[in-house]
Length: 238
Length: 238
DNA sequence: CGACGGATTGAAGCACCTCAACGGGAGTGG
DNA sequence: CCACTCCCGTTGAGGTGCTTCAATCCGTCG
Image (cartoon, rainbow over all chains, first blue to last red; front, side, top):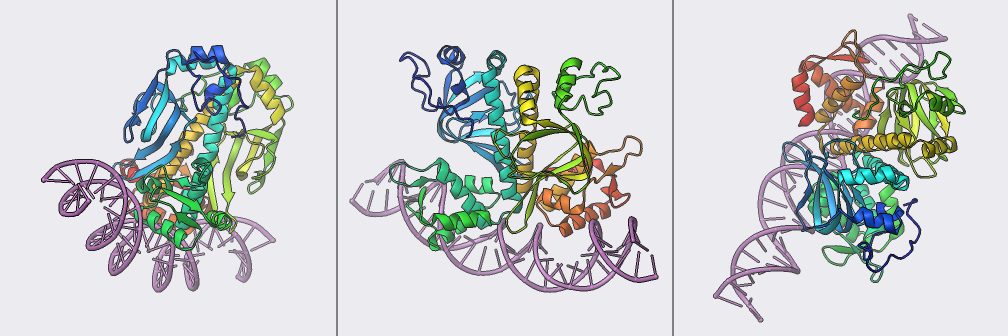
């Protein structure tokens, strides 16, 4: 992201955020050591296993979160059980951009996850005192908005093949292994389907088709490799 | 919107924003008279006829806008001509929430429109000096994000009937006439279709079906009345 | 009045869905 | 170590909701 902080000075060894793997990515990245220490005071680290609900839609928005490891999904259920996933939350991402009293979406752990949990009041006090944090939050919101609108184009106008290709592009940017070049599917086919507005069977068929067309290569049920990047990019655009 | 300013004190008669119909709704609403005057200095009022482009996707984001009258659409075109409208911008809404160097979407006038045009630099300077403005901008971004995610549910999981019903609900909230109870379609069927991820013919058929089912009553090609609000709400939810 | 553009209606097609069967890896227990 | 089961993913066959193509309607404007 354009506003990501440059490399930060190292923290003292006894700093509560010393070990944080996502300090540069997260909103906290704009705070210097002392302010960050105060920020982390009263913001416990919480853990959730895969499948657990972090916040439920219509719950009071009493806390906001910063994800340090794992993966969350943001979803909404229609009365008859249809589900739409509005987005995934990766390490470094922020959960809780809202001015409403209640959350509009449910957040659930897709994989075992750890989060910094900030009481809303604590968080708002800090924002008021640290303009840099507020600016960063705005930048995060603007970025999320752009991503959501991009997803609107996908859901409104792209074919199943284009949706899958776009999704694989996204995973390539977010989930590639530095060492092996493999890219992970960190979520189930059901989650992919509900994110792309398709059915599980269609997701499976389209992935198979890309494999047969030698655009990708499956290296396991939960991982793949891109064989023909150019073709993938073409397919994603329509 | 939850953060809308309460009724504001009246401005002096010679204030450039004295006549502004949307001062309470717009982001400017948080500024007091003197600051607002300075803000409006160097922010000319511009006019666009229906069909004109206000900003083109990939244009440098050199300006941001506040819509005072008319209607804009935010859209994106795929290479082969498919179009998705990501949202409509109503009077009082803000155009230009981004931290990127370029706009991601094209904004075009649907109806003759007037806007306050703020050079980006002027705007950013003002934000830095007025925390209330920055907070308001964040609130606006959070609100837009929630709306976009709601639209993701519609595009990803709702049927054509549900999409149309949801859309009519939205119009009922935004475009109803106080006097006649009539609600306007301020945009063409093509715009509705590209907003809802449908084809023109489907939009037309679904509207006709709602008319036949006595849920709505067409009072012209560009306006309607809700006959059975309860049924409409049911249909919108699935 | 005639022409044009947007909206409506009709008929046929297709992309994706639904229903159903099958496959294979992980965990369990003998 | 294998047999069993469970769950998730894959594959197949048929159905359907929306699209596509095409004709017609209707209000507006020259």
